[in-house]
Image (cartoon, rainbow over all chains, first blue to last red; front, side, top):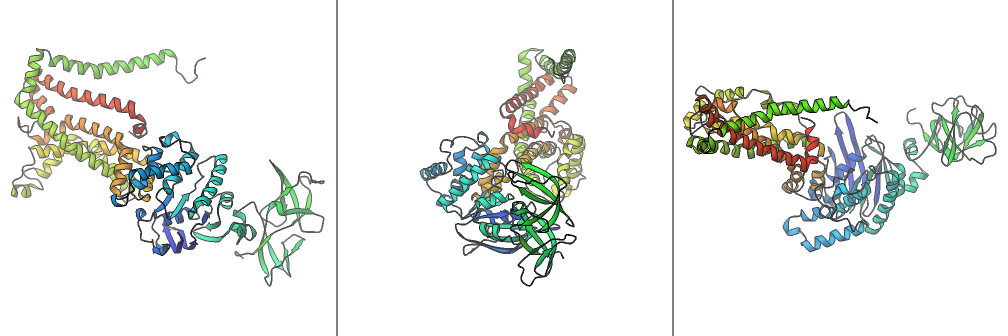
Length: 350
Length: 280
């Protein structure tokens, strides 16, 4: 079912947790709400679920106004971060709970519920574990049971709060691939919250980047990669270098730095921010790009990263080096760097 | 190799011995003496003291009081624990402190409060007189006093447990379409049942043993407003020591039953209680 959020606002004393949020989610989409903690992503998910009531704005499920609809009427499948499995019920009882809780006239017959539970256990690849109790399961298994329990009611939308937050790194990657396949299988409209950009970009069709209660960018994964809408988004979705400078006569220049870079900025002139990724930064000969000084090296499993100090810049730059490169600079060396790819933004603060 | 954190063996044994001695001297010996005194003149006398009409009336009143107080306080305790752990409201800390009031206040003071409210000069005196309702020196006052004294037990057991379990399972149940009652019966109650039983047990033990507050409001009318503890006191004051101890042995037996059930609960379902206990 498609979701339409309009002007959703939620205030906590002193802070706007959500500030006039508009969002459309199409039926069958897999959408990630991505943002740092305090960005309002979980609040937004809880508003959709009916766990929180917005101060203003409307929420539609298809053509139905769900703004005033109570939690139990919304028919959403909500998966809590800590799963919230019923600890005194078996896995099968947990999954059957939603169907068994229906008023008698809407309740499927016993045999049908049992059949549905069996199907879901197969779907989550735990067909043997129906009689276990939650505390006999691993984190990843609990997660899948919570998912099956939410799916059992045939929800109009599936909502997942930090679905992999409580799992270790390896299980996390396995489980999100599995969830991706599951989504392709079921076509269930799904919204999940995460602070992990890698998770969001790998799993989702579309990503909603949030910041301080507002939506910063809504776009497909490709768009987000290709054209982050702001320095914030650029930084949030990967390792980033930021250069604060000016656009003058079609060139991006830095104060106190001799170099410059030709940019295509149309008519724009003035304070600007240039963002670039460490692997998009290359060493060039003297006189090209920007001047910098090597201050440190970091060795990671698959690369060496040089930390560079760029005259006049508050932050250091990171530059990924090819280990096989002929001339590796040393700490203290004066170097020149040029971005192969970069995004230019007018400086909103200036 | 000795564990560096372990105290020397003799300290170890001395402390255990000391604890045993204290338990034996302060707890086991008195209990044994009560039983000894109760049966001093034979089983016949012991039995006669128990079936004597005033004793039977006292036992009935005690059991009736417990039968009214336990379900009421189980309900109030759950309601309070629910309110405190599931909602944010002003005065929550004050409420938490007030729950402990019956523990903090002397039972005699509690009894006197009831006298102030329901006595001949009390606030409700006129109202009660108009409808000819007797509260003070009658079972209603005994029930009220016991209700007050035993109020904290259930709430105190449940609050830490429900705090620790959180509301997420209930929210999950609601989001799956369960109604309020269904959620309570299928999710909340099973999660708290052992702590609830434990609280009820403590509440019941205290309800049957309460002396001070009940003594103030009962009026000590034999066969009518005497509970077991009051009956024991009267017998003792009138030099019927054997009879007093015989009835006391009945109360002691009730205490032992409580103790055994409590022991079983802790052994069998300790996990559902243990964490709740650290706050005591």
